[in-house]
Image 1 (cartoon, rainbow, N blue to C red):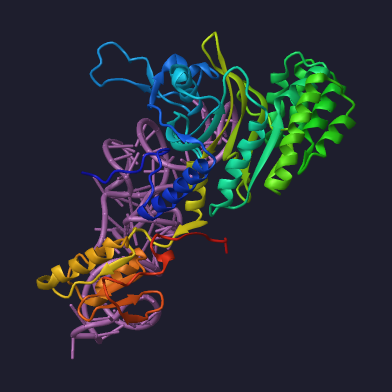
Image 2 (image 1 turned 60 degrees about the vertical axis):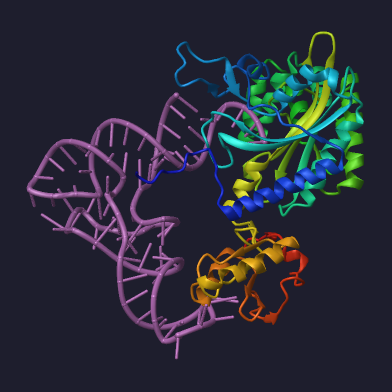
Length: 438
RNA sequence: GUGGGUGUAGCUCAGCUGGUAGAGCACCGGGUUGUGAUCCCGGUUGUCGCGGGUUCGAGCCCCGUCACUCACCCCA
């Protein structure tokens, strides 16, 4: 059989890269649970009409079909994100859930788009959401971004900066200056970074917005501050509207909290739009310093009615971390590496095949005390056995003949008792480190 | 879905106006007779993406196709 080639858009990591990914996922899980979020996993498929409910109709949903199906598909598609399945789950299980309900969910999602740098067809998202019944207290919009920023601080990533805006602020402002459909303005403003102010101006002009109104909208979009001072600049534009004021107040609360709890990691950025139209309050977008070209690696926002059964609505706020997007870039550039490609902390050498059981006994004694240990695959020359460990980044090699253990980093070798010897704590698991670009 | 670029060794890539394929790294062996990484010596590595065409002759030119990749769209 000819050697298969990788499938574009369906990333698969090497063992050492997978260790990095697992470290990231473990850390996210730990921080999320530290904040009381419950873990949830939903099925991979949803009814297609549910999947298309959220946004435009042309979404690239993968449809599920039995190979021998005689009459088309089963009406099921692979989920496109984790928010829609979660909303469905909440509606289905509302009677069994306690509100406000905080959950995290780390799963693969699928999108049938053209793959590109940082864009995959199968990728991992790590979501947290808080949902409540009927009403959702505003403070969750303040708390949620701080949770993911806290997680990022514990990971070997470049600094993450979250850009935050508020839909009420934007919509109130756009309406006040005469825009009938604020979402059209929003969508145009969203392209500011990509196509520049002149083209955005031209697009807005086509919607019939007056020149002074366009100036005001572009003026608003220019505002970016690391604290609540954006509010003064918004007022300076001279636009008055109750919804605008409400949005400003909310965003001020987010920034005030961030200034003390995540300094330098969150900015008010009034051009942040977010394509999806179900957001109703705070919206978040996050860029990785030095990798701004990747786009947002973590985004979300407040939604008032993503889930509703007609009688009860479930407002929520959530953010989603693009784990694959972050890792794809950092692994490819070598910005983050694992100290080894296997979990093994100790390789026990084998003197000769007749005495392999001696090595097995040593390994067993070490494992019993929680030290990940493997036994050399063959009784090759010691040089080869050491190389076996070295290539994998295994830090220690045990020689049962004279009961010594060698530190491959220093070359030092000392006598040791399999029943008592323990490597330094930091050697027990692979070490994940951020490599500064040289 | 639309448009551009690229497919040569495990990896990164050379390959002249068409004349039957190369480098570095990696890998294997030896120097070092059972203690790695350095150094020295030696060695292996290819349906030149696939199919067709032009030609005495194609890695190179032409057509098709597939894959990868970048941009648009959209988004993690």
